[in-house]
Length: 147
View 1 (cartoon, rainbow, N blue to C red):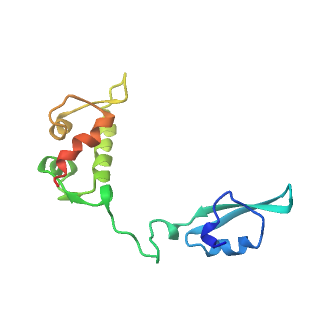
View 2 (cartoon, rainbow, N blue to C red):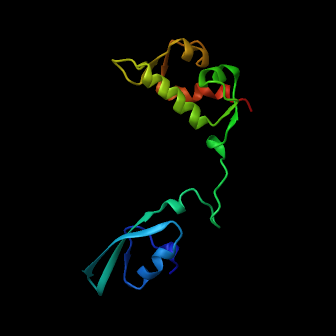
View 3 (spheres, rainbow, N blue to C red):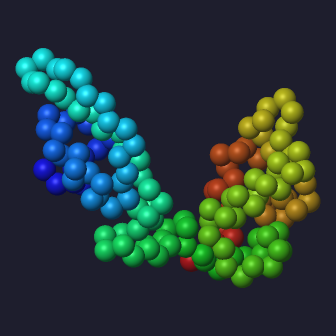
């Protein structure tokens, strides 16, 4: 059994497997509990947690390049004005900035928090709409990321 095969909460029949667990990249054994199980002398439960060194790394220990919605892409002039002049921005960051603006200016409908009441800045990037559902936000930002 390789050390990568040891998962959090897994019951192990052989406590010797615990010695191999810390060798897994990005895994730290947090707690170990043993109990008597039917049919075997002792079963060991392992609780493992990811460590900072294992997060966001590919095999070989190198950091993965941004891709998909986390990759910065050119944005439209309207969105550029909204975010403060950045020429490129990841979609995830654009959505965060829109939500920060909504929360900071209290633009959610008090009766239905799923509805956003657009101010002048949001109307420019949402195609002039007065009210927008929160699920529509990412779809309305798509035209601002030309392909």
